[in-house]
Image (cartoon, rainbow, N blue to C red; front, side):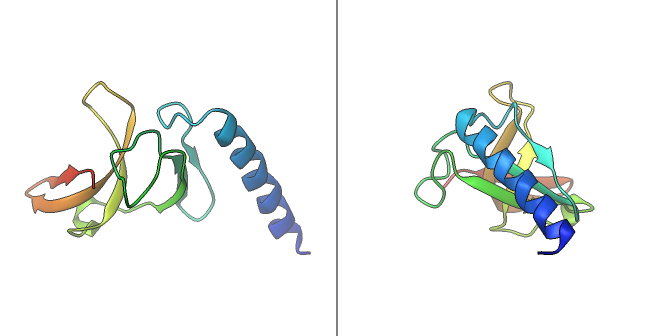
Length: 102
């Protein structure tokens, strides 16, 4: 097995074990290689599409302009309920998008 694949497999396995033990997205957001982030869904706001405790991998975007309507996005929240939110972009506005759970 390629050395890099073995290392990535080990890191992802370790992260999955940790995520299963502590499935709170506000506390456990990790950045992986290749501009990918991984997060754990902590609530049922995206049901029935995504269930709580689902592990998601996200591609980072350069700007909000890269996000399209109906994309599922993972973003830092400013609402005070949790640090990160997984929601769908339901429509675009000048400097962002309006999101909603499914």
